[in-house]
Length: 501
Ligand SMILES: *Cc1c(COP(=O)(O)O)cnc(C)c1O
Image (cartoon, rainbow, N blue to C red; front, top):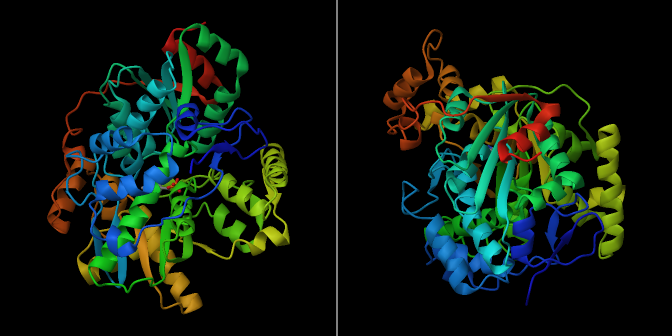
């Protein structure tokens, strides 16, 4: 049965999966949501025998129903290949009593590769299917990892261009170096004077700018998004939860149907939403544990029912989670807004999102709060995060990155608070090499006066894990991108890059 996509905010137009992927964001500013979450009507014991690529096909074909088998399999083949440094694609490792899903074995060593290796293929296929003749301009705001992963995916892909905006002082030195050295004639990178939320809001404003849209069309361009607001990002992220559960079953770590919790270090709420979709497909997932850093807007939301972004923006050692406006939460808000009245859900969602734009806050109803029972939220301070990295290293000799450490720490808080004995999968979202300085500081190593690549070499000696290719290749790479602009001038920057007036 076909799955169709519609906006969370009331526009009733139905889109096929490929049309939703191509467009990125709904015309009314809402996010595309599937009209139902398809069931994973396939025994887990059978899924346990599948490769990552085969699992990806089983999951994605149920969401992306207008892609043919050949199309989808070609996209999957092109995405999950030797770009990953292990044929398992996602190794699941047991450390200190929890299962870590290592989602960082792709080209840019962060979990964004899981979806952004395939999104360009899904998009180019969608363009062909829908007779789209325009050049697709991917506009992306990044808190550090999406930008590089998206450019790695779209670089030199015919018929596409990509423009990335990142907060000038809000990413790690390695993240910045990865972006500004990006090759590809169709790539552009711009540092903005502002934070990630400024970048994301700026991109959303550009999408909504009708006058610009008309000029773009006249010049043969159309925008799309590589952020997790694109359903083509979300669906590939469901795959690894299914895959990891099946692999735990195969390894005899869990029994058939055993309930396992999932802990996710969260920023824009995309990764944890994918886990929620996996649960709704039928994977026996218990609690969805949402881990935040000191930008704990989601912890406060789950505790009080009030989402309030009116607070200082904290720059932390887990910069990819330094976010106060978690875009994908809108999909959850839409889902809990009404039991079965779609129009009502859109009305409620649109009104909250309007309040968020106008006042920076909204409060959900008690009935909505009751539907959040699958979720648990907590956060880790900077000191707690560093402590988690150090303790794990001392206990297991295993080095976690700062984002994964936030999740590890919150999982511990959850167990202490609830005494829940269920097993837990923890999304390990980045290689520690991407945040070498913060990680080495957490391990108590002397860092002052050393450059980041020195620290990378020391981390290699300490962890016994070979420096990934992604880090080696930027060591001496020339800087190719030097654009900087104010957050208010992002639109002008886009016009300049595309040469439209
Ligand atoms: C993007 C990112 C996150 C947050 O994921 P969301 O889907 O935005 O919640 C966490 N950790 C790392 C390393 C990331 O790059």
